Image (tube, rainbow, N blue to C red):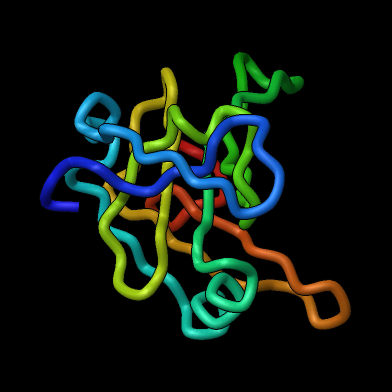
Amino acid sequence: MNSGFSPMPEVGAVGAAVKFRNTSRVARYGDGVEVIISDPARRYVIAHGGGVFVKSHSYRCCSAGSLTLLDVATSPPVDALDYAAVECEDVDVRFLGGRSGQPSQLVIELRGLFKPHLVAYWDGCVYKI
């Protein structure tokens, strides 16, 4: 990614269509985020295409405001072009923080015995504090 270009799925594309996109515009979100990914999660991501998309999402709840959680997917979402690349070995990690900003540390783990799924933690917490 030294050239500033990385392969990104084309929005609305089906199959393996790839479009090269200049990531310099969105890289500001990925600067300074340390990614910690467990070995089972790394193997799961590699087996499911090698990329993971993490997005912060605010939910309205009964407390005095909103609750910001992280949604994780291995398939490219519709807004995949807005995600910033975050440096991580062996796995392509993309993050979209929106108004929530970015964590200092993004932890990705695999949960579930019968239905394995990825979970992400914002600075070690399930939600943003």
